[in-house]
Length: 241
Image 1 (tube, rainbow, N blue to C red):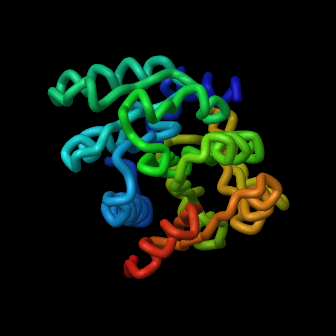
Image 2 (cartoon, helix red, strand yellow):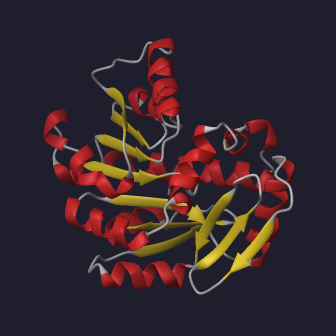
Image 3 (cartoon, rainbow, N blue to C red):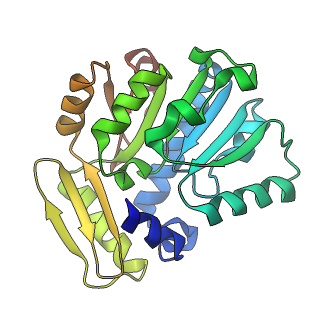
């Protein structure tokens, strides 16, 4: 985790969220991800974006009558997110950023402080932020302990997805990229410090089973997969992506 934190703290990871470098598949991924949130909007009052960087959805959340909490392990992203809140003139009582990791969800997310019921929160892991988390079992156990509804948006592990990811990382300027595959998933690494994994759906299904947490899997766009509660999946599945 320290190496991943250093990679983003140094600025080397910023290229991964530069819209000018997004291929069409990534654009479609993010468009569909937003559509999923829009579909689930009546299910939550507080959106908690985990691995938020400086925030993909604070403006959307506030404009749709939600509270927003962004969580990230990188201090400069938190500082940038707070500045964006001021620049966009978003209500600081409805929109916040805090420094912390997904393994500490129960300490970081306190719905009562927002006057929001537990079941009206959505713990949201956007755009494969989950792929930066080295011990998924610890994270999933934390989700289970918190009792919070959740949505994990991540890459699939098909050959089409792997080809897209590798080209995307090359377009971002990372060199000597190597693909590593095992029973957990597909990881791309480079000497630049890039190290990001897409976990196999079957592997994550086993992790959720170990944690005694029910999960449903929804494939969307050409390259992405969502993991969420079965009752939320029912709302998502009718959508044509």
